[in-house]
Image 1 (cartoon, protein in one colour):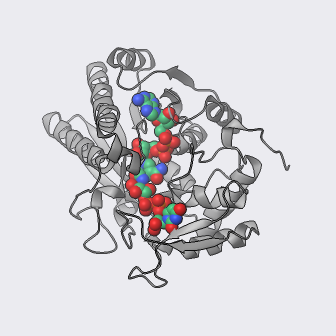
Image 2 (cartoon, protein in one colour; image 1 turned 90 degrees about the horizontal axis):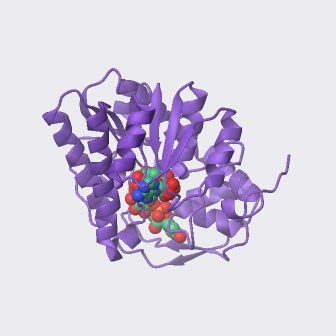
Amino acid sequence: MRILVTGGAGYIGSHTLVELLAAGHEAHVVDTFANSSPEALARVRQLANRDFGFTRADIRDGEAMARVARDFAPEAVAHFAGLKAVGESVGKPLAYFDVNVGGTVALLQALQAEGCRRFVFSSSATVYGDPDYLPIDEAHPRRTTNPYGRTKLQIEGILEDLAVADPAWSIALLRYFNPVGAHASGRIGEDPEGIPNNLMPYVTQVATGRRERLIVHGDDYDTPDGTGVRDFIHVVDLARAHVAAAEWTGRGAGCEAFNLGTGRGASVLELVAAFRAASGQAIPVTVGPRRAGDIAASWADPARAARVLGWRAELGVAEMCASAWGWAARNPAGYAGPERNPD
Ligand code: NAD
Ligand code: WQD
């Protein structure tokens, strides 16, 4: 099938491209490289040993989206493009509403005009806020505490309204839990700019000596070891879920939500211990205060994705850490620096 991948040069998009191409699909990427590098796409081409189309364009540019939709004539879209830093969204809410909400509306208008009505959206477990119960299923009430999360809630609402207005739409809302890890080759991975906000990229930067130590944001939560518990999911499992969801949009109808997680929680200290074991690196840690806005624990009930999409996560925390280390050791400065070739 022909799949348009917005944000395909990004962390999750690039891994998804590899899996889509491996499954025999034809892809076309739209990206501005606002938070990514052309090098990621070059490496995907090498890894997949297959080519795909690319248009450097902003999803907010309705004319450019209409051109891409006309020329490539996608049968389905995987929509990753957007801004994703929770903290930044608090200071720049308009940028987040403009890119995430405005960009998605511009994209949907172009698709609607060209007759493409199969859509896979990158949503987030952030739409559940501080959970009322665990594990979190898709019926859990939705709420949020920051502008980034509000963009995800608003986009989910827009997509639900669209499916009511026109039943020809088939839409999968994929609510990711905590994506980590990298492709087994170590050639593509997560490459955040500046000081990482998220746990795994921070840990890998400590491992490569770019940061001195990890600050654990609080060890007085009501969890077994007092540190936060999350449902970490390997990015390659997540990528494969997109292949399953894109294929499902050909069978399904309406707008349906799916949790993408393993169904198991691991604490911050458990993840650090697994990373030490996988990498052989020391990873010094210091316990600091809680981070504002953090929740104690979150993990998914992923049963619906298994039942409806036929997808379940297969990789565990050991593989997540080994692959994150494989990427970091080979690319200590990310895509900007030289690639070390230990093979
Ligand atoms: P990313 O920043 O690595 O990828 C996003 C891509 O979109 C980048 O390549 C960026 O250059 C591109 N982009 C940004 N603005 C654009 C625009 N206006 N037009 C075209 N391209 C644009 O992020 P990611 O981690 O791969 O996340 C992908 C999606 O998944 C995002 O929508 C994010 O909100 C969502 N998500 C991510 C996580 C996570 O922890 N990484 C969790 C839940 C949901
Ligand atoms: C995980 C745990 C931290 C960094 C965020 C977004 C969410 C989603 C995924 C997009 C927490 C602890 C972290 C550090 C630490 N993104 N931690 N020291 O907060 O669960 O989710 O990313 O949709 O919306 O909010 O992920 O990786 O930031 O934190 O102790 O330096 O690691 O306190 O317990 P989070 P995270």
